[in-house]
Structure formats: C-alpha cells, structure tokens
Image (tube, rainbow, N blue to C red; front, side, top):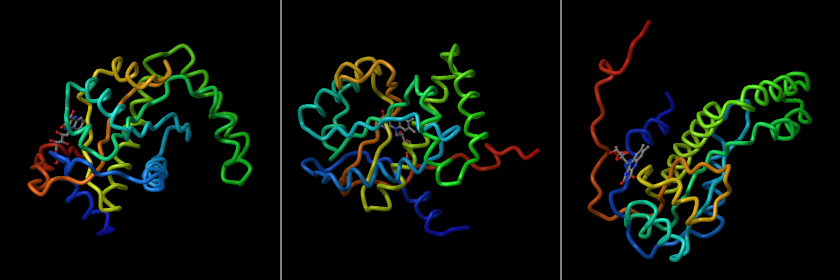
Length: 205
Ligand SMILES: Cc1cc2nc3c(=O)[nH]c(=O)nc-3n(C[C@H](O)[C@H](O)[C@H](O)COP(=O)(O)O)c2cc1C
C-alpha cells in the first residue's frame, strides 16, 4: 500500500470552520482543478465543470443558496462542481486526443461515442447518474489535491441546486453536485470522525 495515500485518506477532515480573509492565487486554483480532473469518468467523458467562487459578492450569493452556511464565505474558494447533463454528443471530440496519441484505437473510440450517445440520448436519469458520479469523483480528487497542497477542505451538499444555478448564472445543463470549500481550517479543528467498522460495511462474495 502507498503510505502517502493512506496517510492522506486517514488524516483528511471536513473543516468545521475556515479562517476568514484567506485567498488562493489563480495558479493554485488551476492546479487544484488540474488534479481534480485526473479523476476518471465513464468513457473518459469528462462531463464536469468547476466554478471557483472567490469574490466576496459571489460567495455571499452562494452562501445564501446554501442555507446560509458561513463556511462558504470564510473559505478562500468554494468550488462548485457541476456534472454536465448533455455532454455525451461531445465524447468523440474528447476522445480524439487519446486516439491521436495512440492510447485508444479509433474503432473503440467510435464505439464508446455511439454507446454514450445511444445510452444517454433519451434517458435523463442515466445522464443525471453519470453527472453525479463524475462530479463526485472529481470532488474527492479535489479534496485530496487540497490536502496534498497543505490546504483544508469541506465537501458540501447542503444547498439548493436551483438557487445555486440562479446565483451563479450556470447553464441549464450544469447540475451543481457538490461544493468543495477550500481554505485554512481554524485551529480548533478536530480529527477525522469515526467510521463504521469494516466488518459492518464489507461483504466478500
Ligand atoms: C456529500 C456530502 C455532503 C456534505 N454536506 C455538508 C454540508 O452541507 N455542510 C457541512 O458542513 N458539511 C457537509 N459534509 C461534511 C460531512 O458532514 C463530513 O464529511 C462527515 O461528517 C465526516 O467528517 P470527516 O470528513 O471530517 O471525517 C458533507 C459531506 C459529504 C460527503
């Protein structure tokens, strides 16, 4: 087992409070998102969009759409991770760089593109499931990236997706799945909370 990854997994916590007034520079924001996009997606669809909310004005609007949760304003940046609902028709173009690099046979890419298109075209719940899966994996990756860069984070689903869309002017096909607040936790932050025993959650068949 890779100890660095284990250490990160067992020591990451959801920040209770952030020290207000902190900021992240644009390079750091880009690096966090670059690492988050290393998360896998079905067919490598990459059906996500990251909105880095850092201005006071936008953070206040986001907080109001998130049941007034103050940590959104106190965090340096609140990343709204959206799963994109209508991305399947874009898959062929997104796979082309892998085809060009010899990482994916052209016929496999074409089959994936058709599979995604046919599977998603008339199935809104499949599109939504895929959007939630992709954004969730990206959210976890972003939190691990933040941890690796010495930053604290908190995942949040306590928001009204419709209000978030309105507050940030998101496109209709962007489903806000998760907010990941990133910044510096206050000194009174406790350790990671207890988890259920493995024996209770694991079934080996
Ligand atoms: C999907 C999801 C939604 C969450 N929503 C919120 C939230 O809206 N506000 C909040 O303060 N914490 C939120 N949390 C943080 C959880 O309460 C926290 O991860 C859990 O208590 C375990 O704490 P730990 O990560 O520090 O061990 C959320 C976590 C997840 C995974």
